[in-house]
Amino acid sequence: MNLHRLLLARAAAQRPLRVALIGAGKFGAMYLAQARHTPGVHIVAVADLDPARARASLARVGWPGEQFAARSLADAAQHGTTLVTDDAPACIAAGEVEIVIDATGHPAAGIRHALACCAQGKHIVMVNVEADALAGPLLAQRARAAGIVYSLAYGDQPALICEMVDWCRTAGFEVVAAGKGTKYLPAYHASTPDTVWPHYGFTPEMVAAGDFNAKMFNSFLDGTKSAIEMAAVANATGLAPAPSGLAFPPCGVDDLPRVLRPRDEGGQLDEAGRVEVVSSVERDGRPVFRDLRWGVYVTFRAGDARSEDYVRRCFREYGFATDPSGRYAAMYKPSHAIGLELGISVASAGLRREPTGQAIAWHADVVATAKGDLAAGETLDGEGGYTVYGKLMPAAASRALGGLPLGLAHGVRLKRAVNAAQPLRWDDVAFDANDDAVKIRREMEADCAG
Image (cartoon, rainbow, N blue to C red; front, side, top):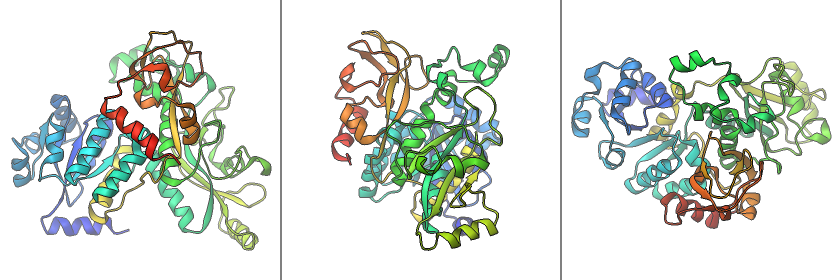
């Protein structure tokens, strides 16, 4: 409740939080737009593989050119300016930096940066939820051992869901389900970058005139991004995916307590304590009334049968939307501001040494699953591509299967044919056992199981 006051104190003492941002794409640009107006924060460096893109992002969000004209990290720290560079490792190692934000979206890069932060004693805010879904439990364990903060990114839906779950449990409620909304139909699992735009209502002219990444948009549509984000939530909260994965039930905000409750009480959950994503469209394509496409939610119930009647009465008295029994209630946030809210994580890590969400154990995994029949010798193209989508699984089921994690299903060749809708296994592909990301993932599978 007092982060802003603490930031003001750091500003008054001329000791701002010194931050390096790695990745100047959409999420990073949104954060940069707000960082200029946040007291007690100094963006010492912006690192991107394409420095020209980083400079364009800074200019686009209103930074004057002289503000990002620093010639070195020392120059940036001394004059309160910002260095634009392509050397992320140097930024992580620099004494001028205390907090690192990874906004690359590349799983292997995120793992490298997190491990480097552990070695250099730098807090890391992991916008890169792809890396967190791949190896977050082990990365968080390494960070705790190193005495640094490893944090999910506030503004992104997983951290907002974790916050709601924490609120619920701290208030003494039992969490029944937590998750987010999205636009979903079963056919979307087969969507490719060639078929994605009509689902969003984008014309060829709109696509040609804009700066759209087809694979990124397709990852949201084909269910992969939902699986990745719910894996992060499950690993950070202890909530579990259903054995069959995400069901994407159509549901508006008024029906959350009715739909997101156990099946034996009239809902659509196999049992309480699940992560789930609700769809903004009915299975026949009709829009859901008061949908939650951009938001997050939690459903909950009183945790003690002896107080249940009293809590039900309180729900009624204070206007909670409930299921017909009055026992189940919900809270939701209808939208999220993505990178515009990221400063909450930066301040929390730097001032309180607290993450805004962090993996506590390996509860859920995202396994690469064939979009269509795949032939031996075919090369997988990863998240949002033509060959695979990500399916959420309990971690124990993935480990028993020997499932190939979605984050490593890029640029690897199939050793055998795989049928459509079939989860892939490590044994199905030719992978490089000496690759750093592969080694970290395999170590997590061995050390963090259960």
